[in-house]
Image 1 (spheres, rainbow, N blue to C red):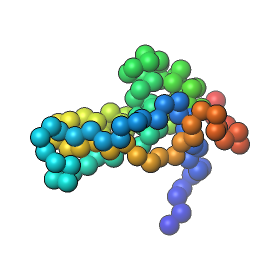
Image 2: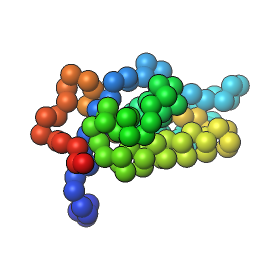
Image 3: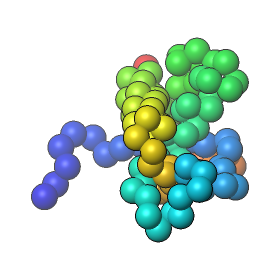
Length: 111
């Protein structure tokens, strides 16, 4: 089945995590359900919550529209909140992104 609309533009990510799993203490990972967060969702969360950027500033850094940025940020917040409130593990993996220095010059941000 084909996806509708324009193809998703890869997000520009400055920071990829070294640690990719977080879990409740005292429970083996094998016994936990896992919530997966994409690398670009984590980057959106990092830029706003740790770097203190506005959503507009952060969307420019990631070279995506404000709407796309907002969707990534909301998804990350929802997943983290769900995992923390229900005792699930968090896995950071996958996504559609390029790291700084490997940007796809053919994909431009619409204004």
